[in-house]
Image 1: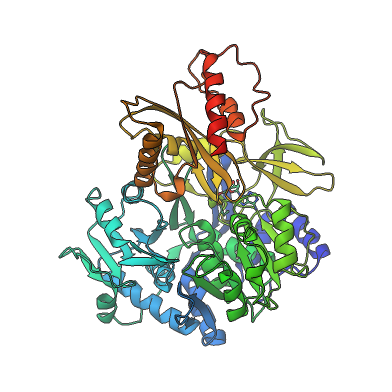
Image 2: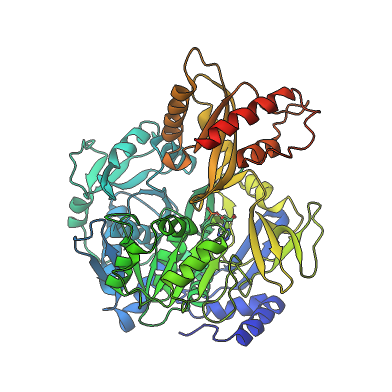
Length: 636
Ligand code: WT7
């Protein structure tokens, strides 16, 4: 099945057709899959109600398309390569046949625990093949997987488990990341104290660390799979049945469960994967994202497997045993397609070129970037030193809510331009609007990025609260999906993403709501109020800067900072740890009590020369105090 654009001309034609006849266009793309029953209608949508339905009435199982469909033609081809944390440990290769067998086997385990179609299953695991197996096993029986990134704290995990009423957790005893071994099961234990609905915990043995197993609740993965066989028919699912929930941050304190459904997600992820990355029959594709994020769902698991590729699951970190690890893995497995985040590139740039010297990197054909804008310096370093000037870089713009890549070059087919995501994929209709929602027509314009027509993998709802879905994405501008990103369309019509325009910051390619960090900080007993903003950070893209009012009760700022950091670690996890905490006596507020974040952002950026008119503030003197304190904090 080729189903792939081969020239820039073809792209233009296909794009045009997709806008003129979207239903015909997507029906043809969907026709390449195995459906148990064909759909009755391609699309129904109403953005005012936040509704999009695709391939209505169609029946299918996504795992038949990821696995069974390939068995006759490439059953013995490697589907997944697991590269462990330790450089000298042996990799594991699973063929499509083996992966199919393991998925069916674990699907039977889930069934034996009473998991049924529609039930939500929590996966809280490190990057091991069993995470991919468990995820597909859920899809096999029609259960809804919800992976929680294993860096989240017990309290963040419990919130997610409770929000979508999950009754079973699949986890591991521990995990290895770089030189550290981390206890994973003990975080689950701590979380479950607050999750009365959880009845079963299945534990994979990874580190061998001694475990307290709760009788009647906790069982070992290896014991469970020994009790079942590897035959499991794929459950017949409706195209619009849920496939997974993935939590993401927004501008309120509470993360939302983004829900994707089966048919549309499958068709879009497959189509975008093939076209953006242009993989071939013998490609070895490596996406370095964790399966706990949307990138790991769409372009480490589903996309590569749907298209019959070989995908790498990497357990380790880029700097262990040394900062040449990525390059070592590329040479070892002869990786052809490499997809990573700008933050990783910037951090590896910092080690200079020596770590690259032992490696050839001559298997590489295509490079990708995702998660945040890639600055020109990092783009050129990636292009020159990793791609050796011969690998197109696809800068892929998308979101948890979009399910798949919406704006990106197609590798080697459409032009690239440093720091530009360039052009929309066929089927995607971007529009730039001003703050009133007026369309900014023509080229050479800058505004808020919206999408004016649905695509198959668009968010269906935020779990348990559809009103919130409408409010967040479909009500800012009438009849449009609002992305939350600012964007420029240059003179040639190429798109450049400028970053978030809401109270969301992007830390190392991970989305973090300022309100979420604030509410964690406010859990510290001495904290009265806090305000969090992003500021430019050399490696992370954006860092987290917290201005905090405390009743100090004699504690030093230093002690308070340490304690506040510990509270954030406990409530959310290390990924939300503030880079700077400044203890202040007040915050700049308007007379109506609204915090002037614009002023705080400027101070955090170190740009204090032009703070605008502060005379209308409730207490203008507080600004001088904060500026003076910030100059000290920024030096540290
Ligand atoms: C936000 C979505 C999509 C998977 C990883 C992040 C930013 C994402 C790019 C890019 C500039 C980007 C946007 C977006 N973003 N990709 N290529 N260039 N910005 O998923 O956590 O849902 O975050 O990440 O601001 O809105 P996410």
